[in-house]
Image 1 (cartoon, rainbow, N blue to C red):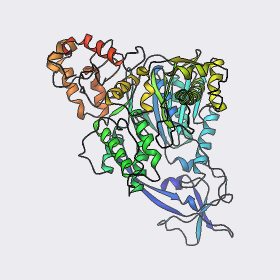
Image 2: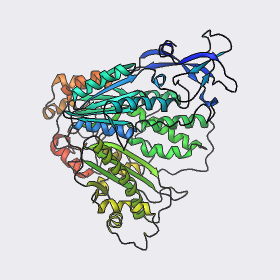
Image 3: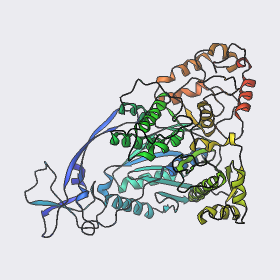
Image 4: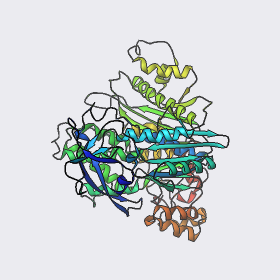
Length: 593
């Protein structure tokens, strides 16, 4: 209320004839820190926007927010180019926006205003339909006056290119991410924003939209660990045994199962899981499957949701590792199954893209039409990832990063690659929609270059089907999906010569307590470093970041997080055993990997 009075949000007056006031109420919330501690208690007055009438007290309402894809791309560029990352938070942002319409609001409850008078709103207030748009217009106008230019690829990204470098600002409502190599420009921007708005400088970027970020000298780790730890309480099954995979291999939908009673709970949990895929690409396919049954879920679908939660229980701290490689190249991988849905025989598209060797976007999506061949389903997947790659190229251009070489697009289907490269219509492809041939156009103009990749190296495979834990862990390591909170090795050497291992970083491994003493001569790990690793299980992210460097084990040649080496599972095992021969078959360390 104090903020509203200081901001002169309204004037008290009698309600004019023919006008209807908008209702209002108080909303009480608790704001938490990234550590889970209570930061402060908040009481906010909000308008009952659902009582507004279009054309009378509001017209346009659209206001963009930053795409999460843009956030990850900006993070990867900042890491690769050694840009610092800062965060600012605008206090009571919606109260800053100017209203263009004539809006009246009922007197707030408990404020003791004179009876018969209402509030004639001068500024926007939380709850009004046009408030987000009013605030966005106010902030972007301020940035434009300071010389910032809006990106055509994402209207929430603003950049300023000066003689000493570039400054970039990404807007998500009232949260701002600021980065760039022009330190003087960043300082000037912060000063100007503080003069224009009631804004708080949060310093280094650490916690954004529920995403925890930890910066190292050689990279950045993003995860949603706190968010994951809160999920099991939803089902009341905290003691359930963790699952090895998020979805059962060979999953088949049982459409004739009994309907699940609590549809609201199902929808609420699936919605939370969808948000979790921001940093957990390993959940993408499983969440895609359960999200297709939001209206009438069955008991089988609910069991699938519970399995995802049990999988999360085993690795709550897993997230995306972005490594500094001094690289800004773009790479895409696409894949598709064929008629995977046994009900309607539609296929599933899966793709992922990398900027500077770091995973930035991914998707698992059911195709809208039935494909008549595996080549056709793969070709449709190529269309989707091509659109994504072109958009990323435009976004990087606005950040001052020019992609001179054609973007590499990897696909494991030779027939689809021939269709994309051959401009002649064939009898079996003439029915494919025109927009699919967008791929051909981008190949011909040099925007993308298609390349074949072996199926065992196809990292987009986990977005199209349920895989075994061995294959899943192998791909996750290759795309940089790691768990910094779990300092032990898991898995075993199987008779089929396939091994699973979880890497701490590119070229790093985690040692389990068992067998550690036997491996110390090879690992060359100090006692202090080993103790630091053993104690990280209950360390906070910030404390762990300070101690991790003392406990890292260099394993040159095991480059599984990046793309410098394309190793099969068998080759991977051979490289590892060559590095640690005492772990080979018959050695005392067998089955302790």
